[in-house]
Image (spheres, rainbow, N blue to C red):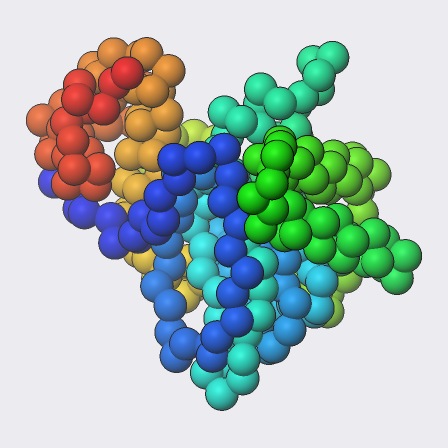
Length: 282
C-alpha cells in the first residue's frame, strides 16, 4: 500500500512572478513543504537557516537562495527575533520563455540543482548591485503610472540576468560555515531522484551509502522530516505530475515513476493533488 506523503504544498501562483517583502517574528516550527513553482529567497535580517533537501544553510544578510520547484524545504527561525526577507515566486514557463537567443533564465535554478547547492553570498560590490536591483524592482511594482507593469517586468528580468550570470560564474558560497549536510544522506537523495522509475528499498539505499538500515532510516527522517518510503512516494507523485502536464498518459506516468500498481497510484495521486491523474492532464 502506498503511504500518503506528509509534505505540504504551499502557495499558489497565477502570474509570471510575485514578490513579497516580509518582516515578522520567527515561528517556533514550520513544516517541511514544497512548491509547484520556483522561488528566490533574499535574506535581509534576523537569525535564520534554511533546510533544502537535507542540507542546512546558515544565512547572513543579503544571502540569496534559489529553491527549485518540488524541492522539500523549510526555514528555521528564532521566534524571539524579527525575520526579514524578500520572497519571489516564479512561474517556470515565464522563466523558460523570457530569454533570447536560446538563453534560458531558469538556468540558475538548474545549476543550483545540479550542484546540490542553493546559496549565493554576494561580496561587497556585488551586494550593492543586488540592493539597487531589488530596490528598483520593489519601486516599479508600486508604480501605477503608464507602463508600470512593463517597468516591473524589465526590472525583474534584470535581476534574473544578474543571478544567472553569478551562478554561471559559480559564485556560490560553499565553505563549511555556510552550510551543513550529511554526505551519505545527500548521496541517497541524489540516487533516489535519479532512479525514481526503479525499485527503491530502504535496505538497498542503506547498502548504497554503506551504513546500517536503522541508522540510515533515523538519520534520513532527521534531515528530511519524513520517513524514506514517504519521501520516495512524494517524489514519484511530483514526477508523475510533471509527466502528465507534458501530455504523457496516466498509465505511462505511473510506470515511468516507479509505481507498480495503477490503482494505488491513482488513489495516492488524488489524495495528494485533489484530482485524478486524467483530470490533471492538460
